[in-house]
Length: 551
Ligand code: ATP
Ligand code: MG
Ligand code: MG
Image (cartoon, rainbow, N blue to C red):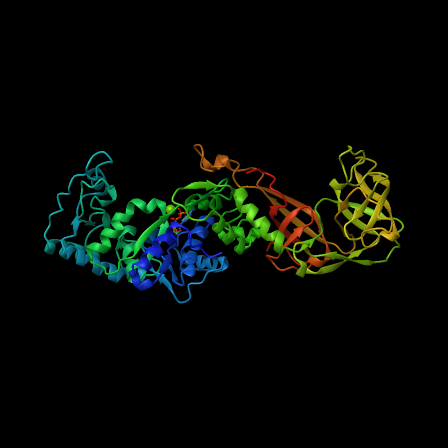
C-alpha cells in the first residue's frame, strides 16, 4: 500500500535515479506548520511524503515549519507527532524545526546581499503591494533597490538588532519586477516582527518568509524531492531561484500534487478552529471533525485512511472526492476486520413464555463470516430478551419479513420464536412487550424439518446485556461544498449528531477498551468512545452498513 510506483512523482524519481542525481538517494519531508491539528488533507500529504520515501528505500523527515511565530504553539507540536504516528508513520530521529535554522538562514541572507541578490527596502507594506503590479501590468522597481552591498548589510544587521520598528523595513530578493510571475517581483525574504517564538523565544525580531525558508530548510536537511500541494506551483521558480542564487549543490526539487478535498468536509484549519471555538462541535476530536483525532475517535482505522489515500492516488488536478468513497474504503476494511456483535438500539422486551425462568442457554455465534480465523463466541439466551422495536409490526405490510403477531422468526444463532401475544400500555397504546413461545428443537438456529422462517433478528439477553449510549453521525455539512455561499456555518447539517440512549449491547462487549471496533449486526460499524464507563458504554457509529446518504 505504499505509494505506487506508477505516478508522476515516481516517474521524476526514476528519471533522477537513472541520471545518477542525488547519488540515487530519495529523501522527502512532511512540513506541517504547528498552528492547528492535522486533518484528512494532511493525511494525504503524509501518505505521499512518507509513502514515496518508503517505496524507494528512502527517508522522510518530520519538519515543523515554524517560521510564523504568532500562530504557532507547542500544543500542536505534540499533537501532530502523535497523529503522524497514529497514521502509521515514523520519522525515527529525524525530527526538525525550521526555527533551528534561523542562524543559518540569516547567514544565507547576508550572503545574498553580498552577491547583490537581496536588498533592504523601506517601502511600507501597502507601497510594496502597489509597486508589485498586476497580472497584466509589470511592477515598478523600489527606490531602494540599488542600495550598495555595504548599506544593505548595515541595515539588515540593524534590522536584526532591533533598531527599527515592526513593518518599517524588509529584506527583498532582487529578481525582476517585470517578471510575468508575480512571485518573482522582488519578493520579501525577511520581515521585522517582535513576536515571541515557541522555541526561540525573543531571540529574533526578524523572521524569514516561507518561500525563502523552505528551499533552504530542504537543502540543509539533504531533501531530494520536496513534495507539496499545487498552490505552490507558481512559487517553484522562487524556490529554485533561492537555491541557485546561493549556488547550493545538488539542489532539492519541488514537485506539486493535488490537494485532497472531500465532499461535505472542511479542510481549512482556520474554519475548523472556528467550529471548535464557537462550540459548533465538541472539540478538535469531535467524531464529526475531519481532523485525524476526530477520525480516530470516530473509529476510522488508520490503515483504512492509508488505503483511501492509495485509492485516490496522486494527481496534478484538484478535485473534490466523494466522502462516500472514504466511507466505502473504511466499510470494506471493517467488514474484513471488525468482530460482529449484537446490539439493540431501540429495545422491545420479548418474553419466551415456555423458556424456564432462571435457565441460561449459551449459544454459539460466529465472530466474523468474512474471516475464518475469527472463531466464534458463546452468547447467553434467557427467558427475557430484547429485540429491535423496528423488527416488530402489529399489522405489517406484505413486504415486512420480520416479527408480527402469529409469525415465527429466528433469533440469530439462538432459536425460533413465534409471537403469541402483544402487550400494550393501556394509556398510550404503545407496545411494551411481546409474549412468544420458542421451539426447543430450534436451539442453535435451525430445526430438523428445515422449515423456513420470516427473518432473522438480532437480540440480547435482558439479564446479561450491557447498557449503552450510541451516537449516530451524519456529515457535518449538508452541502457538498461546505464553503458554498456566503457563510459556511449556514451549511452545517443540523442532524449531524443523533444520540440514542437506553441501547443494549451483548455481554461479550463489556469492558471493551476505548477505540475497539465492532460490527453491530444489521446496524453498521461502531467504536467505543472514551466518554463511557465499563458499566455504561458509549459508542460512535463509524459508518453504516450501506451507503445511505448518497454519493
Ligand atoms: P491549512 O490550509 O489547513 O491551514 P496548510 O497547508 O496551511 O493547511 P500545513 O501545516 O502547512 O497546513 O500543511 C503541511 C503539509 O500538508 C503541506 O505540505 C501542505 O501542502 C499539506 N496539506 C495541507 N492540506 C492539504 C490537503 N487538503 N491535501 C493535501 N495536502 C495538504
Ligand atoms: Mg502551510
Ligand atoms: Mg493553508
